[in-house]
Length: 511
Image (cartoon, rainbow, N blue to C red; front, top):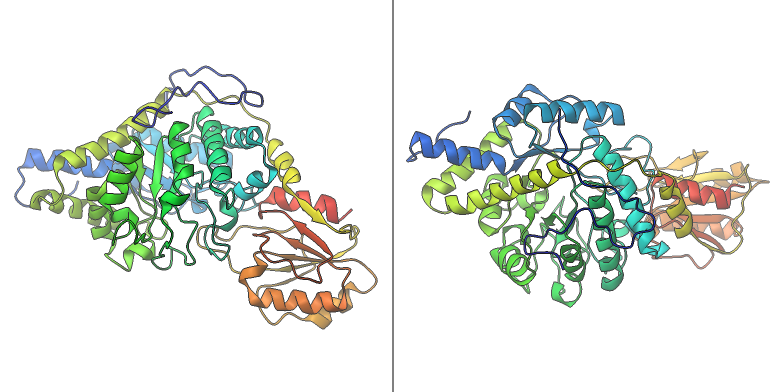
């Protein structure tokens, strides 16, 4: 078990084997209004504590002046997205610039691998996502993939990765988790979550298990509305978080969802869930980070400013913002709301200082880590190959017509390239020109590439119509393989839509 603060020896990696040994050595890295009723000195200190709890985002591949200024003044950290990344070299320049303002600044990124990638948003990920790793069923492989990913993140100056997703995807209709989860069985998800944490942190980058207390048993997306989890998370959803804590995970992200069996307010705002359950019952003493406060589950409910204060009162330490809001004004708004909450007595300065201290503790942990030696990126393709599942004859030939049916991606995934090859034909929605597809495919193989067929009726209708007339067509499912059409005699499941997942499928189908 990890210690009470969620920490264990970062130099030790469980399992051995694929992870090279590496010693941890010290790393050397290259304004607001006063709250009414506070003295200048106290208000200044309180404002500094409030700033330390904020993790905003920004637009562009260079840090705006306001970010640099606030970083130098004590901002806790920043969150990077695909909009901030062009290449590893550019990303390293960006993180160096940020750390030059204040070495302790936490630079975080939302890099899960597979469908959710920021490092390779333009090309698709070199690593499979969680469901493919769960399907491969090799904990040492999961650990090695996370280590390789972590070594790349460390080389680009990233301190904290908002991964892994520790949700148990018990609801196949879940629109936002799906292949981001290691699977539907708590024990499997727990084992792979722990392995991922060990691999990532073994490379010197802090991990973040999300979304506590479990977002897998929902049918709505918290980016768009407030989901409700009907099941008691103590029946299984908590198991991966227990495993992550035992593995020494440095941070945990709260979920913007309602768990009626535990509380009547969203988990991010729940003292019962974040303090009594996570802190007191599970014994986690590390950093608790909110999911993006601009997500509509919070912003359309209590609002962003109230969400920030409520999260701190409930037990969160770091407030993540900036996925959809990336201006300095939102930082001012949240800091002012925190200062007012302290002035009114709703938020104690002790609780605020505790939260800021946990941000500083994670920054100190990261500063002591030395980036790991470069790992073999090829482990990602190896894992994707081992995950592919094939049923029936699937070799369609190098000249096969590839048709891709492309549903809209969730906000968590974004617009990332996917597929098994550049498609000859693609459809983003109905109508699908079935006759036109069949004419183009006459005399050669036909490959139909889909993503989450079970959730998109227009995809299912088109596939049924095409298979009725071309029963030899190969169907490649790059999402959750929850629905295999009866006519699909040639069926490939990749368990994710990362670039390497597509490459692994292409090797089986287009040869």
